Image 1 (cartoon, helix red, strand yellow):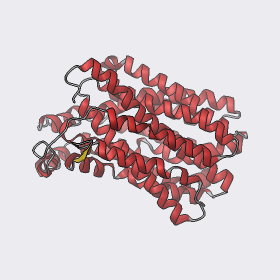
Image 2: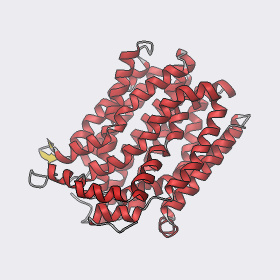
Image 3: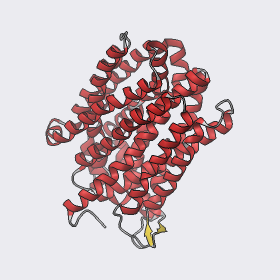
Length: 425
């Protein structure tokens, strides 16, 4: 089934399914990037360098998202008696994600090789799930991209909200295993997406071929792309460093809250949940003003968000109480929700539906580079500068990114990918 026919009814059914899948991803996100760091650093007593190495290795599957995009584009699998390209991989990714999540607090983290291997494959499943849901979303929704972007992010933040309050309450009792098991069980909600999500059945004639993929990466096409430095050079610089803030701070922010303010594990979860509420508000505002954003320009909106990020991180270095931290991060997450809608919509705009898996995953993989670099640098930066100094460094990165984002030529990129031609820069 496609959303081209009976469009309004299809969206009523389809959007909640997409949102519920991102709800699961929000749960996985807070479990592994908020609660797990507290468990490893505060409860187990691992040092910053060890945690940085573990998290960097475990994150590698996210750099390989184009692989899952390519595989699901090209190789369909029979599921429910139908030949499908996305949902079979969503099943596999979901199973890996929810089956391995509890093991992260069951296996001894001091058993480094085994622990990192389990964490690696949990991320492998999660990235596969994320890639194939994104691809199916881009294929089905060809018009209301800002609305779809908002639906995706709201689902993710609702998952964070649930995990922050509900699972945070369980962890407060000191039972990390029970909390992670419940998070994993709730993650099986992706079965609803697998069973009910609309997906057009394909046969070999309709499936993406090697020639389709080669067309995207053809010599002439790449030549046109790389001749436009305002797209490739600045675009890749922006993408590669956009998420460096999360890479540098994700695994050390929550332990810093515990150590500096004496925050409990429940307060850590509540903090993530409350800030997610304001991210949802920001995402809704981004959608409501979608047309205005397009008139003003997606790049200007992202630039404004980056400015807010920089100001927020700089102010974080000066906070003295948990209440002050709330005020600053509510401000940051309003900008996060607002800016992400514009960011995702840009990449959707320049994605060809037939090879949506590999193209959209290609863009998103570059966004993951910043997180990967940040996690690697954190092992050096955090011990050397402390969290306060790290916040100032991140603020500087956010300010500098305003330059490349405004030099990206999205119109030229759209012509290359969608029309097969390019205008001179």
